[in-house]
Image 1 (cartoon, rainbow, N blue to C red):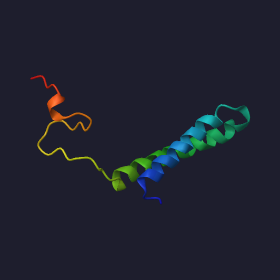
Image 2: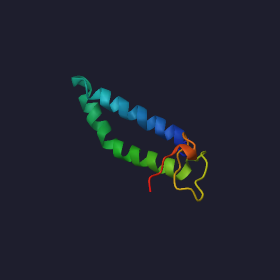
Image 3: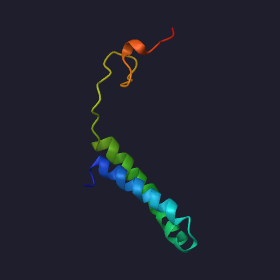
Image 4: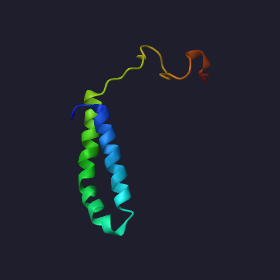
Amino acid sequence: MLRNDVFSAGFVTIYLILYCLMLQFDNTKNYGMMMLLFSPFLICWMVYTVLKHGKYSGRQLGDEEFGYQDKPKDELRVLN
């Protein structure tokens, strides 16, 4: 679970949304400030997990210069 890249990205996203919501109300501001202390560690954990354990499922570039997956190579107008 701690090495799952999708879990870490989802958990940190929900954590940061809750952090932003807690800062909006006066009676939960103290909890939001406490959450601020842990957010850099969680973001670093998420980045490390995604870079270390994430799997890329797209096609490899090889010798090509551009890696756009949404457009065919012929549609990319390259200016020389």
